[in-house]
Length: 113
Image 1 (tube, rainbow, N blue to C red):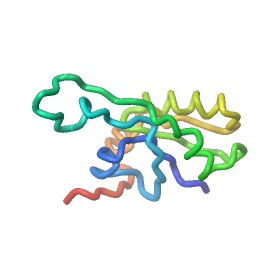
Image 2: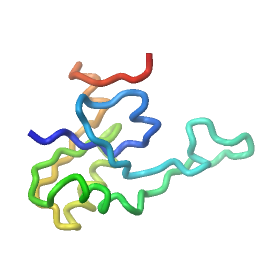
Image 3: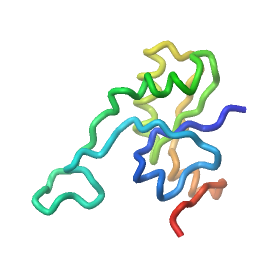
């Protein structure tokens, strides 16, 4: 069985992630969107990873069955659209994402003690 694939930021992954998951960030925080933004910044922002499909393709064949998740299911839904447009055949979004997984009591790796 293929591992789950997450599309979360590195900051999110460092707080905990699905057991045995592999991560390819779909979005990155911009300087304005950092968890602790610079003192002179009030904007919140993220930008799309321009290499997402390429990086994902290096891990997964276009024929493999994969489940993609993020924090809440929204980014991974967008990632699935991009992957399907790139020719992936068997991509499914993990509805509710990591938050729903955690809320259901499923196993996670929590890196923060």
